Length: 187
Image 1 (cartoon, rainbow, N blue to C red):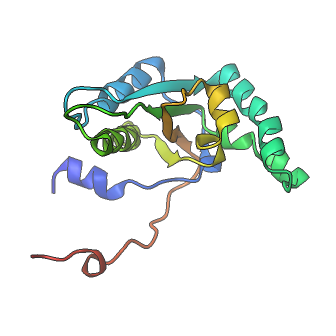
Image 2: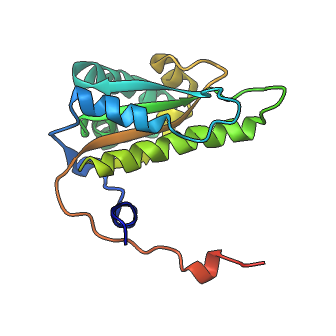
Image 3: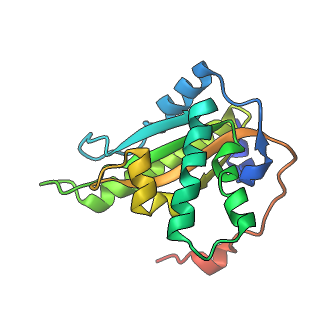
């Protein structure tokens, strides 16, 4: 079995709360992004972009989300409001993948959206290959306009995912996976 197959078979999605320091270096972040853009991209449109969040700016963004969350979720408990910023603060690096899919004369919008999803997956696999854990998440801040405005996401853009990257605090256990017989049909 090749090293690549072993790597892919060992990938897990850790809980964001299990991701800590150290995070990727500047050179490793460049490697992650270089690998991320090596996805199918019919028409060479690059229908995605990245927002790299770390350090104080990530902390400030996470804290700025709290009043927005409170306004759009009036039923939220104090405990939920207290925990909300931890979604972004835990991992040392969060990369928001922004989908810029749109109408095109030859390239269906659906293919552009799938390309953004492939970017997220490449980030997750590349982080694993570099020895980090990565979790691809969305949540309310990927869908609600006040959060998107705070992030600078245009009205014609969408958050494909927030990819949280850091060093897992513990060994990641295997989770149940679909039985191939349940999801595969040969014609």
